[in-house]
Length: 115
Image (cartoon, rainbow, N blue to C red; front, side, top):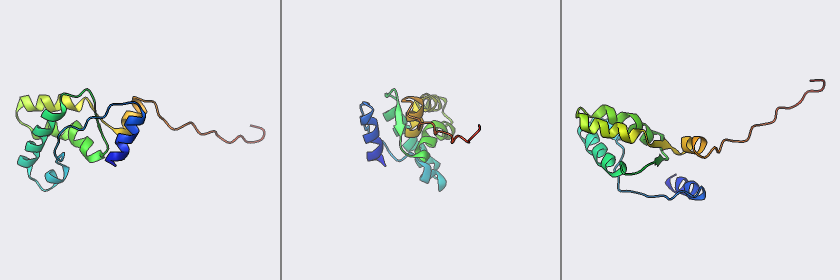
């Protein structure tokens, strides 16, 4: 999946950078290990916050970056960093539709005689 996302972005003329990152934390959060989730979130926030746009290929990772990270922190500083990052995160499908206007062509409706 990652290679496909990179290929699509490169075809759109977008420079792809792969910064260091850890698991977004979705599976870890499922098992209730919030301390590990916070650790991963803090690492990812610090690594990704320097980029104007963060494009993901995984819906679960997108959810963590856009919403869940803000909810795992009680510290207002990290919560603010998570919110800042969330505004720049997009799933690849959202990016292609909104930013590149790559919507599928409108399908022609069949014409009925006498219509």
